[in-house]
Image (cartoon, rainbow, N blue to C red; front, top):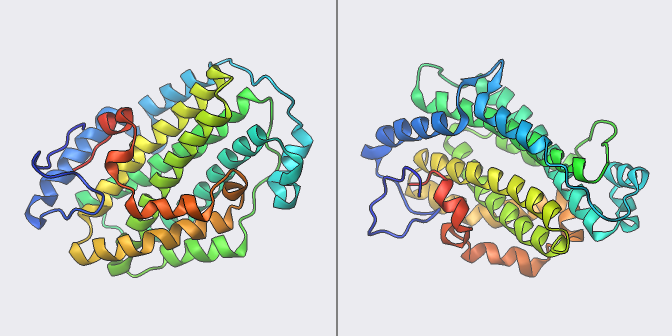
Length: 294
């Protein structure tokens, strides 16, 4: 795994503790990894290598071979009650867009609150801010999938009360609880994106160009999210890891409940129960090879 400093004799795990004495060195190492992955990290101009990736992805000209009703799609975007009018591939695209919308809202709220608490002179908070900005690329990566379907999303998505409460509880959580909650959220997010990766492979197996584009978008996000899990593990001790492990399933069910498109795509209780045994080694080799994890 890229840049990993963990002892090779130990099986890497989302829930393995990090020695306090190693954290500063690991933060420095992760910062160097981010520089290599993102290029010039300028908050006004964007991250140069991520901008390059988006430009390249925009040139992927494969078109979905099938009927797409743009009006029905946007009605379903505004109201889940309309999802019954969509085909399974359209539901998969809608899930991409909704995941984008929920993440964008969460990044904005949490980032605004957290920035007031951060000390810009500390390496930890510098890296934390970089990761917040990195998340904004996920919104662009996911919504970029619409280019293959000839769909243009109309209007601004409005999060429901349940999602606002879920994100608000994270944003305003005291420092002692913030990173265990965030770690649980990141782990459940990795699980969800990994599950979506498998579903995309199944749904678009007959259209390899579209499938590959959607898979590569999810892989890019998974590479980031594995690093985000590693970072948040640096912020918690053994108790925080234990709390995160217990909370991850609840966070997953909360996300599935506020974005019912996941269930329409096949995220059943049986599928969600697999989070209990989910860990780093279940991710694709490409994700593990390209990710930062210690």
